[in-house]
Image 1 (tube, rainbow, N blue to C red):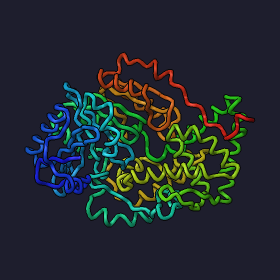
Image 2 (image 1 turned 90 degrees about the horizontal axis):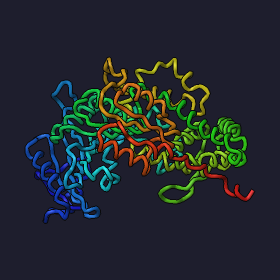
Image 3 (image 1 turned 30 degrees about the vertical axis):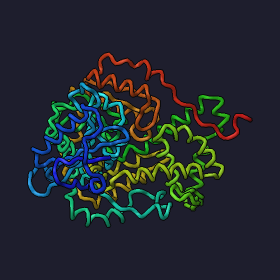
Image 4 (image 1 turned 180 degrees about the vertical axis):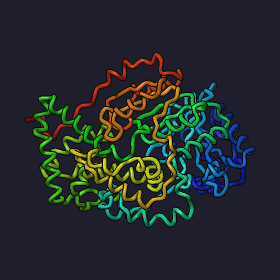
Length: 508
């Protein structure tokens, strides 16, 4: 890559310092004129705006030019004075000779994940055919004053990846350093979407399209509520409406997703033979691990060496939950549950390890606690936890652990109207996966019921649905700017992939 500066300035926090040190700008980038024109426009805007610092980057592998940098905002937006923080952003210009005027803003999930993590996926993505793509790291994530909570290293001790995520001690230990550089009460969804809106104005975009998954869908809903005039369309995938009080629904949603798999097995004679009495065997496995945790040998994802971990009931249950996020691992889950019943936990433990390891590296846990501690947990009555989690394999431990951490975590003031449903006339396409273990289709339906100009589509899948048919629907919606007349024939015909059968089953 080559970098072209619009100022003699290093843009910190988004890995440009080392890039600029090793690559000097010498000749104009070998990219299409529309991209260069867009980059020149953005660099000229930055020259005139003291809060905006941008550099141009040329990606020679994709023959693509884009800009990245930071925008400075007040940490305390209401007061409008005091400490400023830099919000990291990337703009990928459209490839078209006649680009659409409205960009797509990507809102990442978590809370705590950074939109810049999508750079590799979006640099060659279909969105750039006609639209600029804007990736903004929400305050507290990525290159925007990331609020990390260092956990005991799982790379040195894989057991740490099977321990509960929310434990009071590491969060308490992280507080002094975080409070030195951040007022944690200011890292809320309301403030974040107001940052996005200020950046929209700074980049001189009139209206934008929102694209948010999981918690990113909540960001989109809050953005639409606070700034409806700025939004042309919104696409929400794995919908987390305002009524969703994280993490209270996790146990029930995971149980419902697992029940769908069990119902699928009961409905097929072939699956019944492949996975006999799987529900009873699953319950027996849970009981066995509660009384006698298992010692399991797993392969280290980096070194390839074998290591021993202990799998107790809670770690096993959490593994089952995270493996239902992806439809691919969802389809393998019955096979893994049967192996676990037989005492062979390795396949499930290694699959869970790879998934959990990726998730923990992605999420800024301090930011997650700022959002949930300010917006979700204050709306959870401790007296309702047991009923909400009753008769689920996950139980109430995750909720109680997170509430215990929230008790020591600084939180922002909850706006009086925050819990009210979002009711705006923006065109919204909502997508839900049939087997989503965290944002089940009922949540998409709940959000859609308050959005008069919306369409809710349920697709075979897990947490966040995709594939060619879904992409064609999203593309049609984005280009039309309306849910009216969208052809759902193809997505309605999508099949649920078959379950992966036990080894040797076909020979029986």
